[in-house]
Length: 166
Image (cartoon, rainbow, N blue to C red; front, side, top):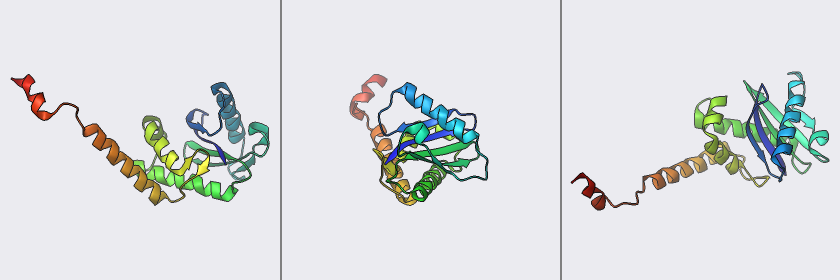
């Protein structure tokens, strides 16, 4: 099971934090700080896999990938394969790149709901749902179409809206 997904910048500011087990906000913030402390202290040429038992408790592992100014971090238990989770990070980043044409930190900050929609298409309730970037993109585009259609619906019929201009 995936326990948490975090995206943070190189200064340690969380840009996305989604925990799939209930934790109070104070505990979430503490965990994010501890994860960043571990990540910023690691050399570039070491493994992206970390035993996270000291941070998240027994049976916890952490996989991260550093892209430009962002760390993408997934925390999971032993039921998940480390290489599969690393590939899942790649799928997430590829999907973000397709949505935002070379994703950057500002895309994540200003398109928070779309980022969550993408993540929910990949992982829901801690379970991996989809591992194909193309399938995730199809679902996200369909959701965007539905949102656009629902925004286009007006509650006042056009025949009744013309009375104001008279």
